Length: 316
Image (cartoon, rainbow, N blue to C red; front, side):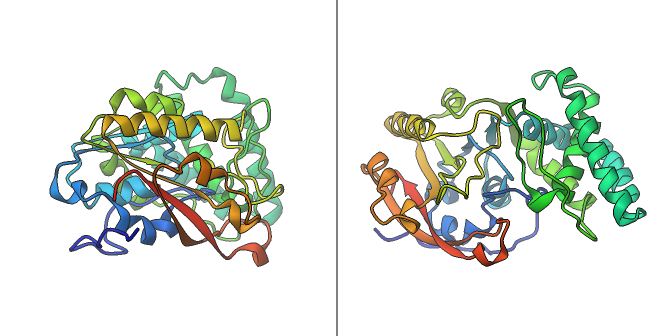
């Protein structure tokens, strides 16, 4: 089935808010494929609500929110730290910039050994304070914590977010020479973009409460690994299994029956095993397309390249 025509006046790199995090599975490099497959209702104004149950770096949210007259957006994630950061960007971006700028200055003025020590001190403080943070109750302490997460994200290995079984951040130091730890302009733009958005902590199923026939939902779940050694699904301590993928497909079917417009992306198992039809079977009732995408986060540079990814839609 052919993709929808590209919207008039759209552009691959317009001004406005963009992702402010490095994030495994971020969709910036898939926007070229997502844009021409967006539902026409976004452009003609019949869709005014956007829902994203796995917000991640927010690439698709920022992309849509600077192009279309969306009245309200609902962004969900089960990652507590990510939700805290988004809430702080929305509510107190100036405080976040102050804290993050201080950490960036300390990093910039340190030797390589001192930078290594600083990273692990911040990581230790971040993990130690975790028990005292209630992700459902905003407080001033969130601002410093959000700055720590931003610092760790920009200075850790490959910008990964990974936690152990206790929920502790455990990615090692990345040894970057000049990381852009705090881009104040980008954070301020993101804060403005979040003005019409509610950021909520919750499993993807929680989004059902706000979805109706005038809603566009984009699902970007933790990708099913291409092989046994390529998993980046530890964004929460319980991971994301094939059973979770199946449960998500059931949610997709439920929202389809409501008349919402739905899009979902995931890795294509056929990249590794041509006989693996996992997603073809789960989403066989809808439109499934394979599109080229570049995988940019991998511990080995020679394994960063173009692969097929899946875009699944319930509309033409």
